[in-house]
Structure formats: structure tokens, C-alpha cells
Length: 206
Image (cartoon, rainbow, N blue to C red; front, side, top):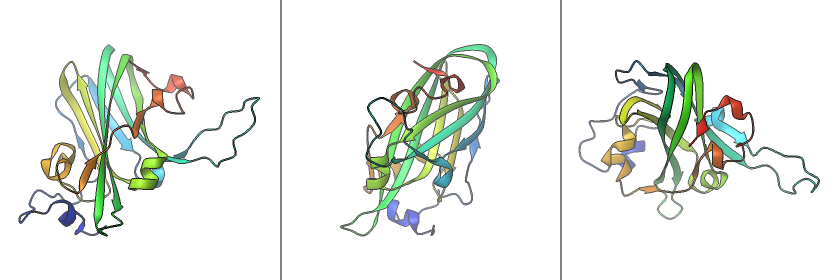
């Protein structure tokens, strides 16, 4: 992707906040309770198809649709964590058919998990709906923010393009005239077609 990408999104005279090469960056505030391992989901790694279920009603007539799944893996140290909040932020990109310029969609979802036992490789996942991908383009950036006992204990992001630091809260991105916040397109696992599949691999959503 060209460095001209953010000249469209950030129409300002000085663009000095842009970072170079900061892909898959983990920002880890001091915490002895939680450690992020990795965040995946951009590109082919995040592509999944609607799962099929066998019933006596017969099969569907339409082919399975394509979703984009974002997974964050983390370790916890306390014997139990009562509640953990993970906020997912996803940035999608497409070309506006009228202006022929890049247009961006910002998706957000906050998920509260409960009764998390001390362990390694916990997984949290969120899904971008097929209609969002088809209409507004694939995701080009993802971030996950962990909040425990009212304090942010970890932040992790992965970008396929150059972005300002902490782009998910940067006014140059989220308040840009070419960025649209879209509600209801990013689903937690409980609200997705995968809700009952391998449920023991994931923590309970409150």
C-alpha cells in the first residue's frame, strides 16, 4: 500500500505522527496480571466461512458467506479474574464509487468476559459480518484494548498500512471526514454463528 494512503485520510499540512514499519505492535502497560501474546485476523489469516449445521430441514441453497475473524491470545496470572473487558477496533477500507477516493469504516465492539482462570493462551475473538466486507471493504487494521479493574493493562494492534500511534483514539483517524463509524457489523462470539462451536476454547461472555 502506498504512503499516499493517509494523505487522503489525514488532509492536514503536517503529517508527522505517522509511524513507519509499526505493524503488529504490542503496547504493554506495567501489569503482572495479564500478558498479550498475539493478534491475528488481517488478510487471508482472518478469512472464515459461515459454518454449516446438519438438520432434518435439509441444506441451504446459498453458498457459505465469507467473514473476517480477529483473534487475540493472552495469558493471565491471577488465580481467577472476575471480569475482563476487551474492546476491539477494526478499520476497513474501500473506494467511494462517486468520488473515486478511499473511504474508511470504523467498527467497534466491547466484550466483557467473566470467571477467567489462571492459564496461558486464552483466546478472544470477534467477527466482521460478510455484508460489511462486501459493501465497505476488507479490514486494514485491528486493535484490542484490555481493561481490568477499571484500568487499561494491555493494548495490541496490527496494521496493514501506515497509521498514527494509537490510531483507534486518534482524532485524525476517527474524526476524519472520510471515516464513518458503523454500528452492528462487528460481532462478539456469542452473537455469531460460531457461538456453540468449540465453546470450551473461549471464556464466557457476560
